[in-house]
Amino acid sequence: MFNELSAEATYDPQSDLERVRAILLGEDNRQLKQLADKSQLELEKARDEIVQLNQLQAEEITYLRAELQQLQETLASIESLKADKSELIPEIQEAISNITEHGVKSQRDDMAKAFGAIMAESTRIQIDEDREEMIQALHPIMLPSINSAVRDAIREFQRQVDERIKQAR
Image (cartoon, rainbow, N blue to C red; front, side):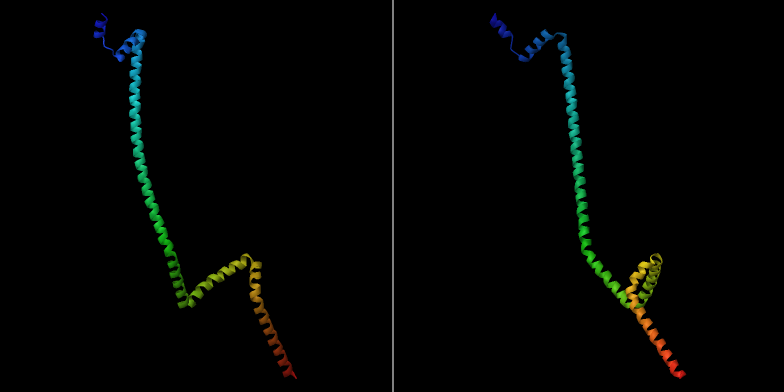
């Protein structure tokens, strides 16, 4: 009989485990099975969401890499332009200097008239705004000229007085 039983029954651990669960848990086994199925569905859904998020993340990384590449190229072109302009600045400065020098030499009188009017107006405004400061600034320049003019005027006056005295005698 034992042989008959062993020949009929084959050992399947999964189905044997299911039978033991059915005996022990009864109605709860069905609920556990439903809960396990529901958990499995939620797990699959979560995996799908993770896959989608990974795809979105990969797309975002690709987009950001393209943006970074574009920004790096823009930066490189800006730096190239900057380097080119840095080389041009001394040339431009020299050209402007040459043009200005030529203009000043060839049109000296016109330049003097143009700047003279500007400087006269600027000096007038400066004198109006701060008379004392202008006096202090001009004092060392003007004093020798004033002294010389006063000396010359006194000498001329003395000469004229001496001449009149001689004529009166």
